[in-house]
Image 1 (cartoon, one colour):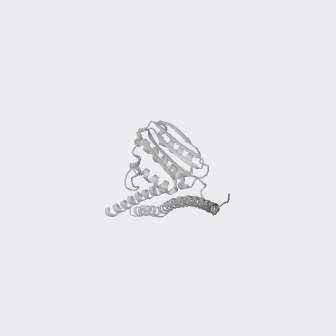
Image 2: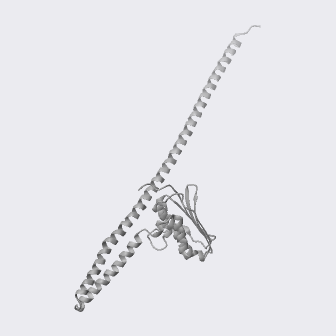
Image 3: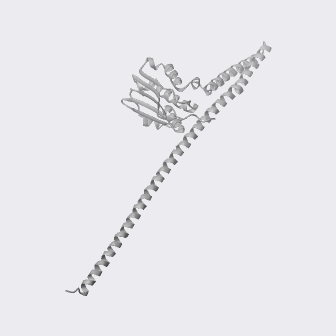
Amino acid sequence: MGIGPGASEGRHSARAGTSHSSHIDARAKELTWELVQLECSRVERLRQLSAAERQLASTVRQKSAEAGRNAIRQIEVERQRIARELHTGVGQTLAAIRIQTEIVSANLPDPPPPVRQAVERIGILADEGLDQVRGISKRLHPPPWQQLPLDAALRRLWEMSGLGGKFEHTVRLQAPRCELAVEVKSLYYRAAQEALANILRHSRATRIQLILQNVRDKLVLQVRDNGVGFDARRVLSRVPGSGDGIGLPSLREQARALGAKLLIKSGGLGTTLELSLVISPPSPS
């Protein structure tokens, strides 16, 4: 039985359909591969962008912390300069005025009453002014604890506070791994000082922990008590310089300036103040 034209055309049509289907399948695979490549490229770009954002954020934090350190360092330098000028300038002038009043009194053994009273008042005012200048100069000069390592300074703070005789306590003070810049040491000391003062005044606690330790690349200070606690959010919302009770807000501003992390948790079970900062050797001045 012969094969008619219809059968031949059918086979040709089938071959054409198969070829067309194979072409579509191949094109579909190409498009799928292109989509996979595009998706991989998109994922890689997103990864690169995320890495760049993290690097940028890290750089900004480092620059911000360094700027804060420089600002606080400059403030400390300016404080010391003013202290020196008060002592050697205004202080010496007032001392000279006091000496001149003594010379006048010695050479005028019996002056008229108004003159005698004026000389006496000048001497008294010179003495009062000199005492004030000396007091301000002393406060502006670096305090003795700044000459100590931080752990020794905190030990001295604890001993001078007298808290050890009033509370159950745990005191563990580990020496920092490297010498600290003045502004960093000041931050940790002020944090401990503020926390201990608040415990003594307000906490009604019976137990205290004062801990300074190196945790990986950070120096961590923790001050804990089992007192009545306080509304930490309300206290920290106060504006530094606006009135009483701004020790903690001021401390938080200083911590931010140095790139440190200050956490304060408070409630019915007590209060924890934690200060941490990545520590590296101070840069040469």
